[in-house]
View 1 (cartoon, helix red, strand yellow):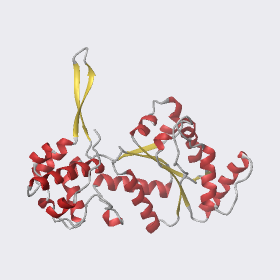
View 2 (cartoon, rainbow, N blue to C red):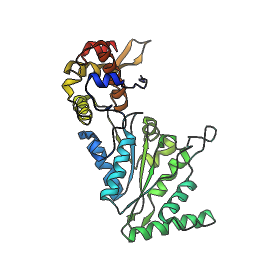
View 3 (tube, one colour):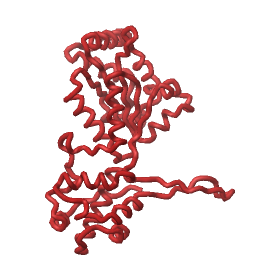
View 4 (cartoon, rainbow, N blue to C red):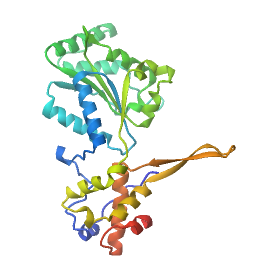
Length: 305
């Protein structure tokens, strides 16, 4: 279930006495980032991989907050990890195959490493020479106290050959010291592709740690309290506890698994309580509450919206 983009009306903001929309242009600095225990764990995992190396995949549904976590990670590196250099190959046109767009090949990653580690140094002419150039640049940076992180977003679109080659990038060393940490960021399809039973990429899958951004079910009230406080509002003045529970239920779907032929069906409950969906759902209910003149969003309004 995807919720349509919702806009908080000016009349709604006036009704709830909100200085601004709590979900639009809401993250301007580190203090605006909501940190649940789960997000803190993901944040620290990214940090440790950047500092000490390894291969990591950050996986999350669309709207789960991956971009926010990555932006917070970069901001923290700028403040606390100035010895860490992030290498980001362009993924502007990246698709899994060349029929849909442009695939990100290992040669492009090599070029990105050279361009980032030594901007004024042109890539050498042959493939072998560029490979040696990468090794030399990373080793020189490491000996000078520099750490290097290859960060690839939209990694669920990586072609299989490039995924396989990441093992070789991760194994670039100076003696025993790994020279390149690799962080992949993508949607749940990335986790499926990195399954250990996927023979095509098993060498990468066996070496890749995976962390996932979970839904906000258990911290939904705390999350909403945080977001509303950033615009000077109290949670109780916007939505009731029953309204919060109804909102959580609205963002939970039942999925049937098993075989209808054998009557062996099981219900799997799937939560979509991710930041983007929560924002759209609450915005719609707030608009309805303001239209009805209700003082706060309650369970009945959530069910009607």
